[in-house]
Length: 240
Image (cartoon, rainbow, N blue to C red; front, side, top):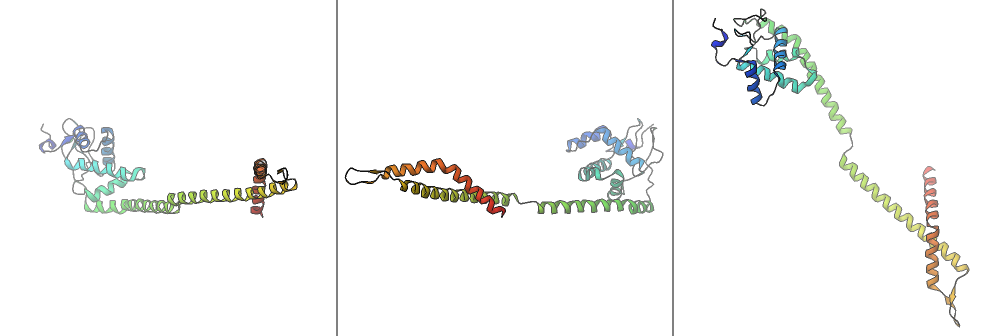
């Protein structure tokens, strides 16, 4: 018996359809393609015909339908069902879609077009509502994401602020050290002046070198203690 579908050029088996799509950059596993085809048939949207060997045979338009399903799933992810995709197919491939209620594992001899205009309207009326809800949810998610991005701090401004704080910290540290050194010098001079060392036999004068050495040693010995007092005082001021 001559297969009716094999009389038409361009019909290929699922394996060849898979290879053609793979060459075009779309690699869909054959089991996945078969599941999609079965789902379309179960939803009474479209039936891929069979040849005399009971193999599904795909036309150019059938391959485009598989490509469309793949792109929809990549775009919407788990948020879209085959039923949702079916309503899209009815919009974009209505002239090609055919459903065969008698399709089974047995050999089939033809495609039975049963999608009437009334059925299309009824199907679209219910299914497009789900698509619109899905689009609305996606828009809301997009808006929330954009709002979250606006609320997030600008990394460039954060880096500027960090550098500014570091510079201010360095300045504060420098001012504190200068203030402590000045205070230590004054204290050291006060201690020195109580009993200064002098040099000379006839004309006694202050030993300047010894004084400078005494001041530096005094500062070195009391620096850590004085710095601690300075920061403790600063913390108390902040608390108040």
